[in-house]
Image 1 (cartoon, rainbow, N blue to C red):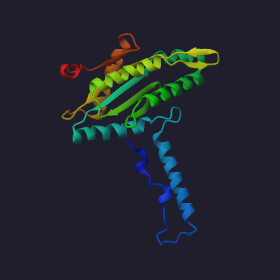
Image 2: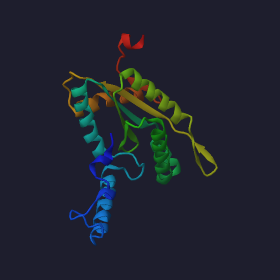
Image 3: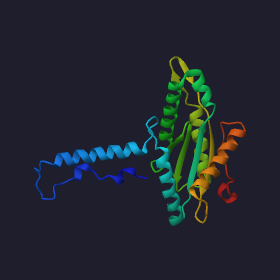
Image 4: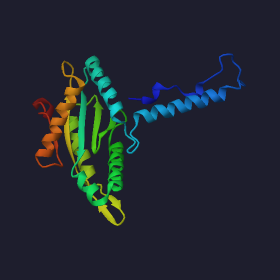
Length: 212
């Protein structure tokens, strides 16, 4: 999803009268740039640079509508860092924030351009993967889990490791669930991953024909 389409390019601003020396032209361009920057702030989580919860809700609704129109599945991955409270308690909240930013950078490096990475809240992230099957989404989540586990962050002279649990499911054309129900369903798989030992991926059953 290209979020920049909402604000037109300021360089394309021209004077309606055709006067290239219009004294107000630069001011209009400056205002357009400021609007674009404000639009980015409204949809972005300041700490991680990922999309925020508000944008997540809008994007998920749009992608589910796209599924209903195109028939292509929308995959949703919920990711929660394991034992994050221990990091805050042992190293302080500033280090905890550094860890969140580090995980966000790993997510950005791993996703495709069309994917929509969001900070859902606290130490939980939500990834919307358009045109992605359950099997593809589960494989992606497992790859990201391993990347997080194998990418410790250096804090002073210490390497601080992180682990994460994942829940994965897809929304397919013909379903009647709401956005809230879909999120709750995926969150249920995340909860199952936590309950079964953490640092793992739980998901719906993959159809046999998809596995072959």
